Image 1 (cartoon, rainbow, N blue to C red):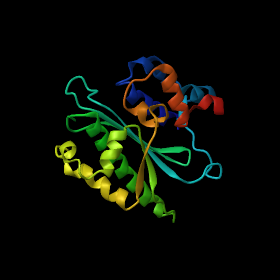
Image 2 (cartoon, rainbow, N blue to C red; image 1 turned 135 degrees about the vertical axis):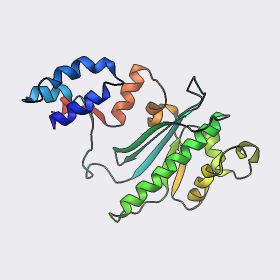
Image 3 (cartoon, rainbow, N blue to C red; image 1 turned 90 degrees about the vertical axis):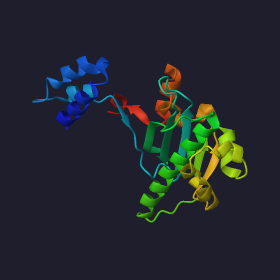
Image 4 (cartoon, rainbow, N blue to C red; image 1 turned 45 degrees about the horizontal axis):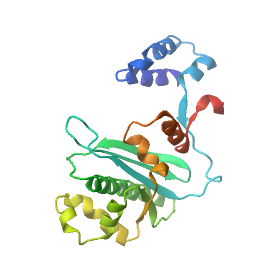
Length: 215
């Protein structure tokens, strides 16, 4: 296990030169690692509490950073999904096209979040767990209204048709879009740089904990 962990960290140093020194120090003890070496290599990890401690419900968070890329002005989509209080799915990805407004950016991100919700629902159905009206939380009221209003053609005619599929799933009560304040938007951590306090706050809410404190 220790060798596999060090291998992953060595791969990560290709884009994280700040951890090169400590990873290489840990790599020197692969033949005979001790608990202290494993403790040094494992710092942060996801915490999955027992399902008996939290109800089984699914919720998705959707957020975006409008024109965040300075090179091509494309936006970044970020989503995460929690089953109970456990983070089970997340992604941060630059969108394929340049958006003309923050509404369009959020609209595309919500569609991506909905697609992930449908996939997760299909997986949990194998365990005979049925879900409907899964909350999809977004902090942009204009994008939420756009999902409900089929008449605003001037705002949607330039958006690719494939992003409009979410309207059918809202009608079929597969998911339900709700507003969440920016302060409670967990997907914010996947879309933009944040202040130190904000970053650590979201880290804790997502269940990313210091493994040393749990040992």
